[in-house]
Length: 252
Image (cartoon, rainbow, N blue to C red):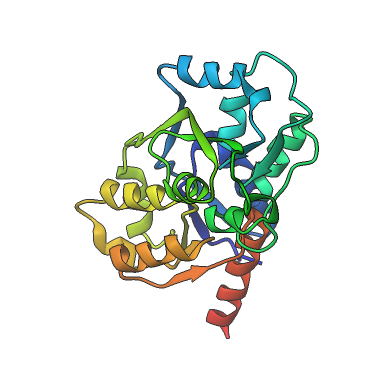
Protein backbone atom coordinates (compact mmCIF):
# COMPACT_ATOMS: atom_id res chain seq x y z
CA UNK A 1 0.00 0.00 0.00
CA UNK A 2 1.01 3.63 -0.49
CA UNK A 3 0.56 4.57 3.14
CA UNK A 4 -1.20 7.89 2.63
CA UNK A 5 1.63 9.33 0.54
CA UNK A 6 0.90 12.29 -1.70
CA UNK A 7 1.24 11.32 -5.37
CA UNK A 8 1.45 14.14 -7.91
CA UNK A 9 -0.42 13.33 -11.14
CA UNK A 10 0.41 15.52 -14.15
CA UNK A 11 -2.04 14.09 -16.68
CA UNK A 12 -4.73 16.24 -18.32
CA UNK A 13 -7.51 16.64 -15.77
CA UNK A 14 -10.08 14.78 -17.87
CA UNK A 15 -7.77 11.76 -18.11
CA UNK A 16 -6.49 11.64 -14.54
CA UNK A 17 -9.57 10.13 -12.90
CA UNK A 18 -8.85 6.42 -13.30
CA UNK A 19 -5.27 6.80 -12.13
CA UNK A 20 -6.42 8.85 -9.14
CA UNK A 21 -8.94 6.15 -8.22
CA UNK A 22 -6.22 3.49 -8.44
CA UNK A 23 -3.95 5.54 -6.18
CA UNK A 24 -6.71 5.94 -3.59
CA UNK A 25 -7.52 2.22 -3.79
CA UNK A 26 -3.91 1.47 -2.89
CA UNK A 27 -3.82 3.87 0.04
CA UNK A 28 -2.32 6.92 -1.64
CA UNK A 29 -3.41 10.55 -1.81
CA UNK A 30 -3.56 11.75 -5.45
CA UNK A 31 -2.69 15.39 -6.06
CA UNK A 32 -3.94 16.49 -9.48
CA UNK A 33 -1.83 19.16 -11.16
CA UNK A 34 -2.39 18.88 -14.92
CA UNK A 35 0.55 20.13 -16.93
CA UNK A 36 -1.04 19.31 -20.30
CA UNK A 37 -4.43 20.34 -21.65
CA UNK A 38 -5.94 18.70 -24.72
CA UNK A 39 -8.07 20.65 -27.20
CA UNK A 40 -9.79 19.78 -30.47
CA UNK A 41 -7.85 20.88 -33.53
CA UNK A 42 -8.54 24.52 -34.38
CA UNK A 43 -9.21 23.74 -38.06
CA UNK A 44 -10.73 20.26 -38.37
CA UNK A 45 -11.38 20.48 -42.13
CA UNK A 46 -8.17 18.71 -43.31
CA UNK A 47 -8.69 15.80 -40.92
CA UNK A 48 -12.41 15.62 -41.75
CA UNK A 49 -11.50 15.34 -45.41
CA UNK A 50 -9.20 12.40 -44.69
CA UNK A 51 -11.82 10.61 -42.57
CA UNK A 52 -14.37 11.13 -45.34
CA UNK A 53 -12.02 9.05 -47.54
CA UNK A 54 -11.15 6.52 -44.85
CA UNK A 55 -12.21 3.61 -47.07
CA UNK A 56 -9.31 4.40 -49.41
CA UNK A 57 -6.75 3.44 -46.74
CA UNK A 58 -5.39 0.03 -45.84
CA UNK A 59 -4.38 0.89 -42.28
CA UNK A 60 -5.26 3.62 -39.78
CA UNK A 61 -2.83 4.08 -36.91
CA UNK A 62 -4.02 5.85 -33.76
CA UNK A 63 -1.16 7.08 -31.59
CA UNK A 64 -3.16 7.73 -28.40
CA UNK A 65 -6.58 7.53 -26.79
CA UNK A 66 -6.90 11.25 -27.56
CA UNK A 67 -6.39 10.45 -31.23
CA UNK A 68 -9.29 8.00 -31.03
CA UNK A 69 -11.59 10.41 -29.21
CA UNK A 70 -10.99 13.43 -31.38
CA UNK A 71 -10.37 11.53 -34.61
CA UNK A 72 -13.52 9.44 -34.58
CA UNK A 73 -15.55 12.53 -33.70
CA UNK A 74 -14.67 13.77 -37.20
CA UNK A 75 -15.80 10.57 -38.95
CA UNK A 76 -19.22 10.79 -40.57
CA UNK A 77 -19.56 7.18 -41.75
CA UNK A 78 -19.21 3.71 -40.19
CA UNK A 79 -15.76 2.16 -40.00
CA UNK A 80 -14.88 0.55 -43.37
CA UNK A 81 -14.34 -3.22 -43.19
CA UNK A 82 -11.22 -3.09 -45.36
CA UNK A 83 -9.31 -0.73 -43.05
CA UNK A 84 -7.29 -2.29 -40.24
CA UNK A 85 -7.15 -0.18 -37.08
CA UNK A 86 -3.82 -0.12 -35.25
CA UNK A 87 -3.41 1.17 -31.70
CA UNK A 88 -0.08 2.20 -30.21
CA UNK A 89 -0.93 0.62 -26.85
CA UNK A 90 -3.60 -0.90 -24.60
CA UNK A 91 -5.31 2.36 -23.60
CA UNK A 92 -5.65 3.33 -27.25
CA UNK A 93 -6.92 -0.14 -28.12
CA UNK A 94 -9.51 0.10 -25.35
CA UNK A 95 -10.69 3.45 -26.70
CA UNK A 96 -11.13 1.90 -30.16
CA UNK A 97 -12.96 -1.08 -28.68
CA UNK A 98 -15.35 1.25 -26.85
CA UNK A 99 -16.05 2.86 -30.21
CA UNK A 100 -16.88 -0.61 -31.64
CA UNK A 101 -13.93 -0.61 -34.04
CA UNK A 102 -13.28 -4.27 -34.94
CA UNK A 103 -10.05 -6.29 -35.10
CA UNK A 104 -7.71 -3.73 -33.54
CA UNK A 105 -4.00 -4.55 -33.81
CA UNK A 106 -1.67 -3.62 -30.94
CA UNK A 107 2.06 -4.14 -30.37
CA UNK A 108 2.94 -7.08 -28.16
CA UNK A 109 5.84 -5.67 -26.14
CA UNK A 110 6.70 -2.03 -26.84
CA UNK A 111 3.75 0.33 -26.74
CA UNK A 112 5.19 3.14 -28.84
CA UNK A 113 5.99 4.00 -32.44
CA UNK A 114 8.79 1.46 -32.51
CA UNK A 115 6.40 -1.23 -31.31
CA UNK A 116 3.89 -0.36 -34.02
CA UNK A 117 6.60 -0.48 -36.66
CA UNK A 118 7.49 -4.02 -35.56
CA UNK A 119 4.02 -5.36 -36.42
CA UNK A 120 4.10 -7.95 -39.21
CA UNK A 121 1.33 -6.22 -41.13
CA UNK A 122 3.45 -3.08 -41.53
CA UNK A 123 6.59 -4.66 -42.99
CA UNK A 124 5.70 -4.89 -46.70
CA UNK A 125 3.83 -1.73 -47.65
CA UNK A 126 4.60 -1.06 -51.29
CA UNK A 127 1.59 0.79 -52.70
CA UNK A 128 -0.35 0.61 -49.42
CA UNK A 129 -2.05 3.65 -47.95
CA UNK A 130 -1.71 4.45 -44.26
CA UNK A 131 -3.47 7.11 -42.21
CA UNK A 132 -1.78 8.26 -39.00
CA UNK A 133 -4.13 9.91 -36.52
CA UNK A 134 -2.28 12.05 -33.98
CA UNK A 135 -1.99 15.44 -32.30
CA UNK A 136 -0.29 18.49 -33.72
CA UNK A 137 3.46 18.09 -33.79
CA UNK A 138 3.69 14.38 -33.06
CA UNK A 139 6.81 12.29 -33.70
CA UNK A 140 7.72 11.78 -37.35
CA UNK A 141 9.26 8.31 -36.92
CA UNK A 142 6.11 6.44 -37.99
CA UNK A 143 5.55 8.58 -41.06
CA UNK A 144 9.14 8.45 -42.30
CA UNK A 145 9.65 4.73 -41.67
CA UNK A 146 6.37 3.72 -43.31
CA UNK A 147 7.24 5.82 -46.35
CA UNK A 148 10.64 4.13 -46.52
CA UNK A 149 8.76 0.81 -46.65
CA UNK A 150 6.77 1.96 -49.65
CA UNK A 151 3.57 3.25 -48.06
CA UNK A 152 1.68 6.38 -49.05
CA UNK A 153 1.14 8.12 -45.71
CA UNK A 154 -1.36 10.81 -44.73
CA UNK A 155 -1.48 12.57 -41.37
CA UNK A 156 -4.73 13.52 -39.64
CA UNK A 157 -3.93 15.97 -36.84
CA UNK A 158 -7.04 15.96 -34.66
CA UNK A 159 -6.05 17.62 -31.38
CA UNK A 160 -3.56 20.04 -29.91
CA UNK A 161 -1.78 20.25 -26.58
CA UNK A 162 -0.94 23.26 -24.45
CA UNK A 163 0.42 24.03 -21.01
CA UNK A 164 -2.56 25.08 -18.85
CA UNK A 165 -0.27 26.91 -16.39
CA UNK A 166 -2.38 26.35 -13.32
CA UNK A 167 -1.32 28.35 -10.26
CA UNK A 168 1.55 26.43 -8.72
CA UNK A 169 1.47 28.12 -5.31
CA UNK A 170 -0.73 25.55 -3.53
CA UNK A 171 1.32 22.68 -4.96
CA UNK A 172 4.60 24.31 -3.95
CA UNK A 173 3.38 24.90 -0.39
CA UNK A 174 2.24 21.29 -0.11
CA UNK A 175 5.57 20.07 -1.48
CA UNK A 176 7.54 22.29 0.93
CA UNK A 177 5.49 20.84 3.77
CA UNK A 178 6.72 17.37 2.82
CA UNK A 179 3.41 16.13 1.46
CA UNK A 180 4.45 15.21 -2.09
CA UNK A 181 6.20 11.85 -2.07
CA UNK A 182 6.18 10.86 -5.75
CA UNK A 183 5.47 12.28 -9.20
CA UNK A 184 3.85 10.52 -12.15
CA UNK A 185 4.65 11.78 -15.66
CA UNK A 186 3.21 9.72 -18.50
CA UNK A 187 4.38 12.07 -21.27
CA UNK A 188 7.61 13.95 -21.90
CA UNK A 189 5.69 17.17 -22.46
CA UNK A 190 4.03 16.80 -19.06
CA UNK A 191 7.45 16.53 -17.42
CA UNK A 192 8.81 19.57 -19.27
CA UNK A 193 5.75 21.62 -18.35
CA UNK A 194 6.01 20.68 -14.68
CA UNK A 195 9.61 21.86 -14.76
CA UNK A 196 8.42 25.17 -16.25
CA UNK A 197 5.66 25.51 -13.64
CA UNK A 198 8.22 25.20 -10.83
CA UNK A 199 10.65 27.64 -12.40
CA UNK A 200 11.62 29.29 -9.10
CA UNK A 201 11.34 26.12 -7.00
CA UNK A 202 13.16 23.53 -9.08
CA UNK A 203 14.87 22.10 -6.01
CA UNK A 204 11.55 20.39 -5.23
CA UNK A 205 11.99 18.11 -8.23
CA UNK A 206 15.01 16.53 -6.53
CA UNK A 207 12.94 15.61 -3.47
CA UNK A 208 10.57 13.02 -4.95
CA UNK A 209 11.01 10.05 -7.29
CA UNK A 210 9.38 10.31 -10.70
CA UNK A 211 7.54 7.33 -12.18
CA UNK A 212 7.35 7.13 -15.98
CA UNK A 213 6.11 4.41 -18.37
CA UNK A 214 8.74 4.70 -21.10
CA UNK A 215 12.52 4.77 -21.46
CA UNK A 216 12.41 7.89 -23.64
CA UNK A 217 10.54 9.81 -20.94
CA UNK A 218 12.87 8.44 -18.28
CA UNK A 219 15.98 9.67 -20.08
CA UNK A 220 14.56 13.15 -20.49
CA UNK A 221 13.41 13.40 -16.86
CA UNK A 222 16.77 12.20 -15.49
CA UNK A 223 18.56 14.90 -17.46
CA UNK A 224 16.08 17.66 -16.59
CA UNK A 225 15.16 16.88 -12.98
CA UNK A 226 18.34 15.22 -11.66
CA UNK A 227 16.32 12.94 -9.40
CA UNK A 228 15.41 9.27 -9.04
CA UNK A 229 13.43 8.06 -12.05
CA UNK A 230 11.62 4.72 -12.02
CA UNK A 231 10.56 3.30 -15.37
CA UNK A 232 7.38 1.24 -15.08
CA UNK A 233 5.34 -0.94 -17.38
CA UNK A 234 2.49 0.69 -19.27
CA UNK A 235 -0.88 1.18 -17.62
CA UNK A 236 -2.26 2.69 -14.42
CA UNK A 237 -2.12 -0.53 -12.41
CA UNK A 238 1.52 -1.10 -13.40
CA UNK A 239 2.46 2.41 -12.30
CA UNK A 240 0.74 2.01 -8.94
CA UNK A 241 2.35 -1.40 -8.36
CA UNK A 242 5.76 0.08 -9.14
CA UNK A 243 5.19 2.80 -6.55
CA UNK A 244 4.18 0.22 -3.96
CA UNK A 245 7.36 -1.79 -4.61
CA UNK A 246 9.50 1.35 -4.42
CA UNK A 247 8.09 2.54 -1.11
CA UNK A 248 8.20 -0.97 0.37
CA UNK A 249 11.96 -0.99 -0.28
CA UNK A 250 12.31 2.49 1.21
CA UNK A 251 10.60 1.30 4.39
CA UNK A 252 12.88 -1.72 4.58
